[in-house]
Image (tube, rainbow, N blue to C red):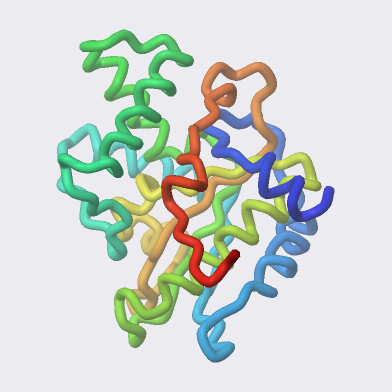
Length: 224
């Protein structure tokens, strides 16, 4: 699979099989991922790879906190677009598409709540890669570098038959990662990536989010 093919085929996987991902495969993916560019070669990213009993404990505790109504407090805020904006519109359009595929009708609050739980348990993926940076770095400084390595992880997973989902919901209660995976307070948890083999024929995995046409978001200067 060449890189252009991988870029076009990558999508968010929201339902995984229970088949475990071998550690060797995850190591190969991360070895490829760290070839990402970073500002002045600072390479600020760090990884915590979680599976097995530890991951199950994290999933369970995340959902317990969500259902108790604990206020989320992520260490890196992914969301932040204006409510009345094209960015919000795109998010709503994606949510409608997902709910249509998984059979959640409009107004079904219980169905939406159950779906939200899936994000807090990483869509039942058998493994999660948590991206962190050192707490001495500014909140925004390493964000572009982390984004580059994050994209590499998602692309490098594809030749192994694996799918990924960048899952900011999974980091809404960062103390859970610290409790079970030993991530120290000196590290800022940025975002987890759920990774595993996509569940065959899962309705959620048929979702294909749209992209804006290039002519609407690009300016060309100096070309004849």
